[in-house]
Image 1 (spheres, rainbow, N blue to C red):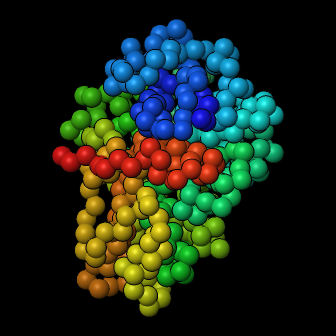
Image 2 (cartoon, protein in one colour):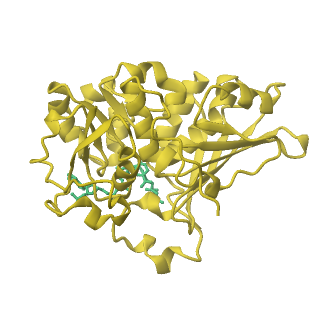
Length: 342
Ligand SMILES: NC(=O)C1=CN([C@@H]2O[C@H](COP(=O)(O)OP(=O)(O)OC[C@H]3O[C@@H](n4cnc5c(N)ncnc54)[C@H](OP(=O)(O)O)[C@@H]3O)[C@@H](O)[C@H]2O)C=CC1
Ligand SMILES: CC(=O)N[C@@H](CCC(=O)OP(=O)(O)O)C(=O)O
């Protein structure tokens, strides 16, 4: 059995990890932390786990994380980087759901995250946990930087086009919409029901911290610098991201076959038939990125529609997928859920 610890068990990605890992046949949950609720049975806070989990929250200090085989950090940015070195030194593998290890250029990370990085050498070592491009390196890693939610939907949508050199890399656009659970389980005004329900708005158009993360990935796929515009929106969903991606086609390629072939062996990317429109509800609760590719009016603009559940393929599901790869288990262990309609 794999002994698992979770730091940050009271947030949305933490409870989503618990939902997935309680059904994982090779996992023994050893510790789940909360600084405020230590001692409280986890299922008292999250009744969906009643009957599945007997564990109580413990403080991060008393959780015995160094005795685990793998620790997930489901914490705000800047927490994992303080504790990762000690865990790695104790032989524990680390999967960080936050952004501490995602951006290789430390100066860029410090600029966007507005803090000094505690361990740049570990950033160099960390493997970016997008299995569809990095599966081989994930297998031997000690430290996984789990991708952000928008970055997962956007990178998987652009990946086949950039690898094939099929589009003009100077003008790539991602128009993305997220449900409010993307903002975490905290009392902030913009995610209050009366603010977010029956409303729709763009935000951070001048600069969102996922822009450098996505750009870093797109440049690796393309093998050269890219021009990239990212516009996130808050939409009155609880779960879900819908990314609409635009680029100019620059090569004579059958785009539908390109996508189908690129993802033919990927269990967690579903390319829909030509002309389809993926819905966020079709991936709700499921570790799937569902994609459709369009070329409106047969012109030279390609439009890719990419949907994920931000808490599953965009966070906890992808983290469990990475754990399965790290421990050489079938990649879909505990991840075979179907999306929920309606
Ligand atoms: N929500 C989403 O869709 C996605 C989120 N992410 C990232 O995953 C991480 C977690 O997100 P989310 O679950 O939404 O966040 P939440 O705000 O919902 O939860 C944060 C958790 O971290 C704990 N925590 C906060 N500060 C500390 C600290 N200093 N030390 C230890 N624990 C701490 C909190 O527990 P307590 O206060 O009880 O100790 C809480 O359980 C974030 O970095 C987020 O950006 C990534 C992809 C998608
Ligand atoms: C709707 C909403 O507020 N979404 C969040 C997504 C952030 C997130 O989860 O980001 P990391 O994974 O990089 O920490 C935001 O735009 O800040």
